[in-house]
Image 1 (tube, rainbow, N blue to C red):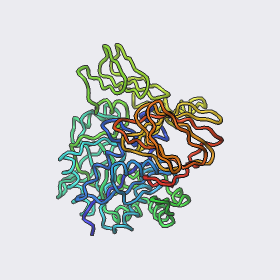
Image 2 (image 1 turned 180 degrees about the vertical axis):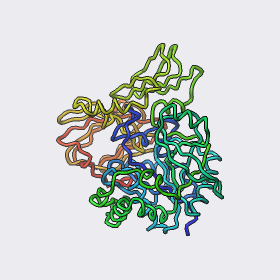
Image 3 (image 1 turned 90 degrees about the vertical axis):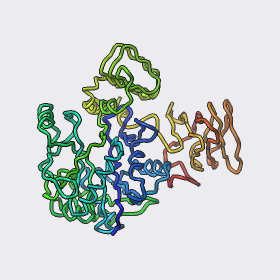
Image 4 (image 1 turned 45 degrees about the vertical axis):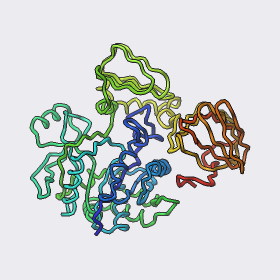
Length: 475
């Protein structure tokens, strides 16, 4: 039996609760909020110890497949597999498909650790103690969840009531509690014996599939058949769309954990947040003496206990207390931190209006392992982008059938390959790439490279990028 844990990272969510930075096509797991890694990359790093873990399995959707591959490659972390969900079906079908994949690769006794890709966790000694206890408990045949010691009467989390102690240090589960009102949350904290439901699980692959076949047979059957009929595409395993869509749309909590008598919980005290609101980001941020968390170009005067973040213009905030002011390139959100759980209501209203729907879907700035780009201007036969390339990084060697490109270097030094020729382009210099010519952009310097790219032509779709050589597994 494999003695290592196989991490299963759920990275398919399209949540917009951290709008305007998070969008449907650029969700929070792939964005940097705290530190120098995206939340997905931080999750990968937590499961990178080869003594404890096998290479992770990631389950995501079609839209994010290259983001997953690129962000893993940037860290030099190999993956056991990338499963692609053809349609969104909540966590139970995703867990079932991943468990069937792991069972086929590592055997039915292989231990899975299921993790969300968008949680902020401090992986200290207490965290790894909880992992050790959970593994021992899962080996005994339990379905284990991690319960976080509550620090406040949070109403945005589900709770678990702790039952009797089990041999390895876990406990039985008395009951799961839905997201409570404030009065009920305060009562649970004062009574004791309750923990937050973290959404982190550990169990044997065969065990979870067996129990799903008892309590949610349609989920288990659909996942197994979708995997059996899956197709391979580069580094990806594409689950069969028709079979996967036949599964009920249900969470693993509802489908299994709340029904089984075999559930266990590991009470844990490590720092954890699902970063489900701007209030949560503020609580985890480095606060100044006035209680403010600020990033980007900001000036705060007579302002306290607030979160101010700018990815674009300079934000000046005066005389406010307990607010979130978040500026992306094309939208600004202002609201009270205590109301930030309700950002979804604004997003729904924006999405329902044709003039503003795009603000909830796409983001002007897209991040890549080599840097990224910001869309500046789009027209019928042209588009303008600002490219930024990290020192030492390079884009794929590629060509286009329907567009030509002009690159102007505005900061740093560019190494540009056009056909058989490679040349250096410095600040205030420009270069032209004819339609159909093989080309590549790289940053050989020590500072961020910034280029203005002007594309002209008849078609600008992603499928007109023909990659000749690519470090990131893209066709």
